[in-house]
Amino acid sequence: MIRIALIGFGTVGRGFAKALAENREIIEKKIGKFRISAICDSKSSITGDFTIEEALRYKLEKGRLPESIGVEEIIEQGAFDVIVETTPTDVFSGEPGLGYIKKVLLSGRDVITSNKGPLVVAYHELIKLAEKHNARIGFEATVGGAMPVIKMIRDGLAGNRVKRIRGILNGTTNYILSRMEKEKAPYPQILSEAQELGIAEADPSYDVDGIDAGAKLVILANSVFGKDVRFEDVSIRGITRITPEAFEIAVEKGYTIRLIAEADENGKLEVSPRLVKLTNPLAIYGTLNAVLIETDLAGEVFVIGRGAGEKETASALISDLVDFYGNGSFD
Ligand SMILES: NC(=O)c1ccc[n+]([C@@H]2O[C@H](COP(=O)([O-])OP(=O)(O)OC[C@H]3O[C@@H](n4cnc5c(N)ncnc54)[C@H](OP(=O)(O)O)[C@@H]3O)[C@@H](O)[C@H]2O)c1
Image 1 (tube, rainbow, N blue to C red):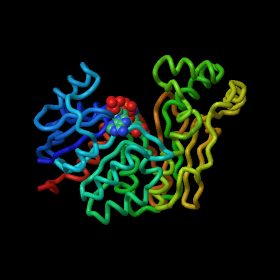
Image 2: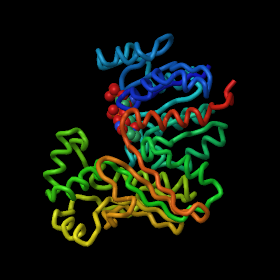
Image 3: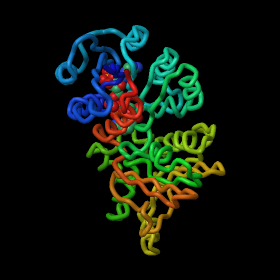
Image 4: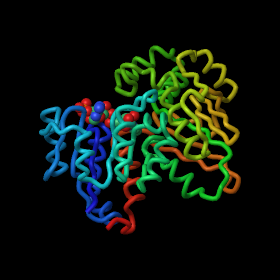
């Protein structure tokens, strides 16, 4: 029986728990029996015997969980085999996730996370820590939501030399740019409409200033190219200065403008608004994400999909779970 402790019970944490309950049969065929043995949010928790449905109902009704055992204590007690960490991202400090993840890896247990912060701040430290303590860290959910980018490169394209990765890694900015292109409307107007629709945050800076895409690029560069790069190494320009006139000129010439994140084997690391031919697969619309991978053997491989959302992110978290415990690798 695999025991999963879940840290963070917001959009992603709850989506993960719901997906485990809904797809239990499919997942148990792959990894055997599992249960969630503890859940924590920022101030409360649930441990012992409980069902996923009970925890979800309690959080929905009361806005918290029934107990007050802290995350640190739950980690120290160690009544789990894997932690699924879904606390908020801070790409500058990595906290609170970084501290939690280190503690779990030090105890020799596995970690799966959707939180970019810890990997952006301490990618190599965490990989080494996991190796040293015979533990694993899965982070497919940190880049591209449902799109299996990291696994596809590592497994499906294993044996290739990856030359370059270009992608649209932020759905909010892609949505804004798509609408600016189609409606010839100014940035502030589309941003405020996107905020009303809940597509952009009240503080949109992580998205529109390119920070979120830059963070994902750091994780890709470190994991795919084996680089040792940090957030400060990425040259970043956001989308706030793009005008409807720029779109008009671009479209007239057969191009659109998209926020492109690019990393290559020579160390290029850039997030910036770029002209993209309307016929290029990266000229995608709405909140979608896409990644174009250039390799020596397979040539170009293109992945497109939903880069965020509770179910989509759950899909990526579960793929790490199956990776770790699939095919009876857990006794
Ligand atoms: N939303 C997406 O579509 C998406 C997609 C991919 C990756 N991600 C990443 O996944 C993570 C979670 O995103 P989200 O949208 O689920 O965020 P969220 O809705 O804000 O949920 C965050 C959860 O973490 C809890 N939390 C906050 N500080 C904590 C602490 N110090 N210790 C323990 N728990 C703490 C919160 O507790 P309370 O419930 O008490 O507030 C909440 O349950 C983020 O790192 C995000 O960047 C999100």
